[in-house]
Every structure is written in C-alpha cells, then in structure tokens.
Length: 408
Length: 174
Image (tube, each protein chain N blue to C red):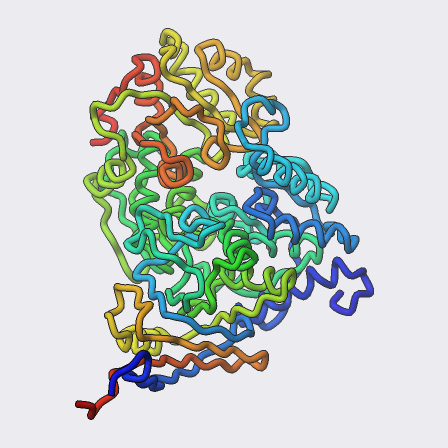
C-alpha cells in the first residue's frame, strides 16, 4: 500500500498508519473488521483539507465504516444556528466522508443499532464514548483512535498491533469496590455518569474492574453513561464489571492488584461539581441524549412523561439521537409522546457540539455527565446535573426539582 | 557594564535524551502543564488559548511554546484541534510527553502530511521529565516565558534531544 500500487490516497493513509505504529512502538500491523469515524465533525480547515486530499487522491474505505455526529442536522436543518462560514465547510466535510465510502450514520452511538462488534474482534473506532463502550460492554478491541487515523484505518483496513488490541493490556489493574453504593444510586443513568466521573479521575492509566454491583441493576444505558463520563473526565478507554461485561465473565475476574472503595459522597461530589448554576437560577432547558438517546431511553422517558402534564413553556427539552433510533422510537410511538409534551428532537448532531440552543437558553439541566462536562466550555451555559426523573419533574415545573433520595 | 541584552548570558543547563515520536525541530519558552489537557473543548483552535475552566492553567497560550505534559486527555477530536492550531500558526513549537500519546502525535502527523509542519513530538521518561520540570526557573506550575528556552530536536532515526537554556545575569560586573 505504501508504494502507491493501490493508489496515492491509500499510500497517504498507510503513511499515517505506519507513522502511528512507530509512535506506539508496535511490532506489526493487524487487520480490523470495521471502523467508526469521528473526523467528520468540523474542527477547522485542517480536518477538511485532510479529507479532501484523500478524496482527491482517489481513496476509498476497505471495511464497513460508520460516521460520528457532524455539526449539522440534515433532517431538520432549521434547528442549527451555525453561521455560513462554519456550516459550508461542515457540509463539505460530511460530503467528503461520504465520497470516501463511509455510511451516512451520523451518530456517536453506532453500537445501539448499527454496528455491534463482538468479543475479541479488532476494530478501529474513534469518539471516546464509542471506544470505551465497544471495548468494555461489547468486548471488542480498539485503541483510543482519534481524528485522521480513523479514516486511514478504514482505508487501509490496518492498525498498529498495540495498546488495547493486546490481551495483556486489557487485564484489570484497579478494583473499584462499589458495594457501599445503594440500589437507588445505581438505579439511574446519572448516578452511573457521576460514578464514571469519579473513576475517570482516579483510574489514570489503570484498567478498572467494578465489583460489588448487583447485575440486575445494570443495563447498557447506564454503562454508556458511565463510560462517556469517565472518558471525558479522565480518558478511560476500557473498564470491566465483575460478573457482567463479557471479558470479565469469560476470565472470571473479580479482583485486581489495587483497590479503591467508592462512597455515595464521592458520587454526589461529582454531581455537585458538574452543577455550575446557582440554586436560584431559572431553568431554561433540559438536554437529553448525550451520547445519543437509545430506544430504551425513549421508553424510560415515555414512562416518566406518561403520568405528567406537558413541559413548562419556559423550558425547552432537547433530545439528541440518531436517525435509526428516532425511526424506531417513532414506530413505538414514544418519540411522538415526548414531542406532544413539548420535547424537540435533533438528529445527526448533538446539542453540545453545535449551536442549537437559543441565546435565551442559559441554564440547562441534564442527566449526561459528558454534556455537563463540555457544555459550559463549548456553549457558555450554566449546568444543573441531575437524574432523568429530576429533569422531567423540573421541565414540568419550569424550575429545578431535586429528588435527594435518588442520590442517597 | 550596562546595556540592553548584554548583561546576561545564555547557558545550556540541561540536555536530556528522549525518543522521537514525530520527527522535527522546534524551540521556545517552556509551558509545563500540571494537568493533562484535552485540546478539543480545552484549547481554542484559532488562538491556541487554554479555555478549559477545569484546568489550572486556563488562559495560557500554547502558541510557540515547548509544551510539556504527561499526555492529553478526553475527546478523540483533539487531533483535529491540534492540527488546526498548527495550520493557523498558534500551536506549540514542540511537544514533550511522558506517554506515547497517539492523539497528540496524529494531530502533528496530519499537519506534517498537509502543510509540511515540523513540530517535533518527543517522549521522555517520567524521571527525565521531572528533572526538566524542576530545572525551570519559575517552578513547575508557572509558564516561564522569560529567561528559559527549550530546544527540541527529534531525528527520524528515533533519537531525540531536549535542551534547556537559561539566561542568567552576567557575574562579576560593578
């Protein structure tokens, strides 16, 4: 591939893969079965120049390839308040990745409906929440791939034999004892997100193994929330849950050389740290779906709003999701139920990466640790971090409502 | 003797060998980051300023510095932001890490592929990085744009060298 026999675009991609192999001190390259691309979100001219150069040199992806969110909602273009100088290159970037042969999936959660890699499968994924989910919940193997290398891996079908592709680097080295955490604290996604914030801080480069958790309390939405926040606060790319995640079950792991005990006070500490708004601030917005709302989360929301009146007019409820999940939620009638209460749904992108919220939306409640982590920096808003139940009750009341029992 | 610029001398005070992650050569004032930085969401792509409100060095400018940190953190979009900073001329002149950080290296490699960028990325052992950090004149927590300068040379054969120069007042004058 390097010599250009497969075309100059493939040669450019292979130069990047080989250079990365040197950075990682890898002994060889290995094949991957699929790729997930994050480079399709516009971050400036350099990203567009790179994709356009690959297109101009005739490159095409060699493995099935999904695309992460962009900064535009192609189904509901009126929702995005991006100025033309950003929207035009953002659209050109999306077109370039489609021209390279990637599927127009535009989601940060391809694992929910589109691509479910299996235990031990080598893949090349970018986007920190997707990486940690694929490694941990599915047991597939991907290193923390970033922009540029994701598409180069898709074009060459190769990655360096390094990092989390190696079995010996996937073994848990830090036991996270969660036996002191109550079923009600572990009963909602926000609790898991806050727990992820704790673990992201303390894990460092260690691989955590969560112990002392009743498997009946766990579902993929909670693990998604945990991983996304741990990846945001600390760069976590792999965790295991004793008795639950596939590698932990296969290997029978139930302890690790080092051990930390997690308390409810530590989890509440992250909740409070992620809450930047003052207690008397008005509530303008609720932001759901970071990472993209799943079908089961639409179901949880439908169950909560089913017994409630409509959301307050002064509070906008945004839900970010994928086209596929939105289609399924519409078939189930759950999307319409949320919309009838006043929720607004956005696809292909996310409310924290592009201007969707209006200038009057300054104080935002969210159950997403990742949204809470990045939005104050990206959007300049104030955040109240809370459970989905707290968010729904607050959206109905038009002011922040706390359910302290959910955090005990 | 008095006069502009003539009452100090520049001396190489430290020379440390490292490993090339991305070849190139660059020099500038050292900027040691006490905590890992996520370029995406944490540093402005058009000004190179650290905008992460959680970061202790919020407000510092990356442009032209020799950026020293253990590794980056957070989103995998950081490579694009770093490449864009290098394209726009507001990125670091050199980067010194203690971990083989693919996200940082890829931002630099892409800028090299597209624009002929020459920012080196060098790996130091944790001990050598600590020695370098503790040799900075204003202590490790404060960016030191004044008298300290670091030159990083990373060769394609894998060998690299990091040189710390300090300007010191000329002795023996009255």
